[in-house]
Image (cartoon, rainbow, N blue to C red):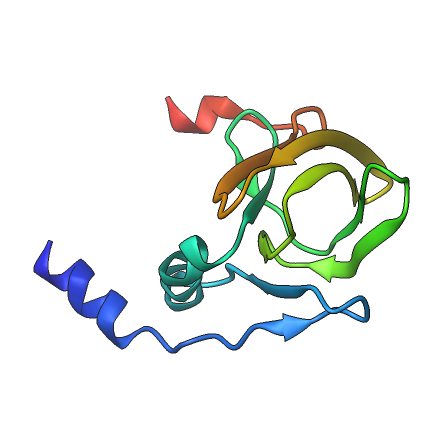
Length: 135
């Protein structure tokens, strides 16, 4: 347990980027150090998106994401997101459209003041898995 805390303490801090619409965000989650750094930042963002596929929940990268507000205006877009995407959206209801290798998922989410909501988008049929190796 002490080793985990030491790793978190020494995880390289990530710097939030700004979208063209002024929305702060972080995209990461490749490698243990980056996962730890992302987790340390999670509560600073109103929406935490995680992308996975298959029944095993294997993380996926290179996901294209568009987020629309209630007026059907696109407020956020990223091409090629890593498995963890944290976005700072204001209070409201949003439609998330995510595309993983041509397979699309939609999810509606409502955010309240100072929300910290986690949404896991999983493409269950995106991969064929051989589970016999795990037996």
